[in-house]
Length: 79
Image (cartoon, rainbow, N blue to C red; front, side, top):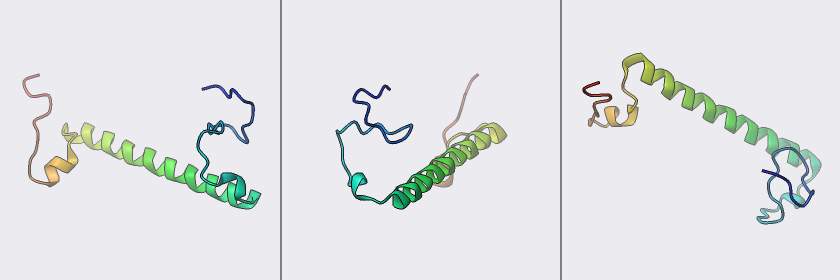
């Protein structure tokens, strides 16, 4: 995506004046803290997805939730 208006504060800032959740009302310290929190949440999500991928490769069953709830789904049946 390209910054059309040229008003971004940092790389990855795609607001472009469309949605405002009060970001402009925060101090610089609060903005840095919130960006750090969001970065850490993204890293945690990536680790969760990696864990799902590893689990799929270990026993060839990608549907962990279905397996835990008692309705396993055959994966790659017949291949």
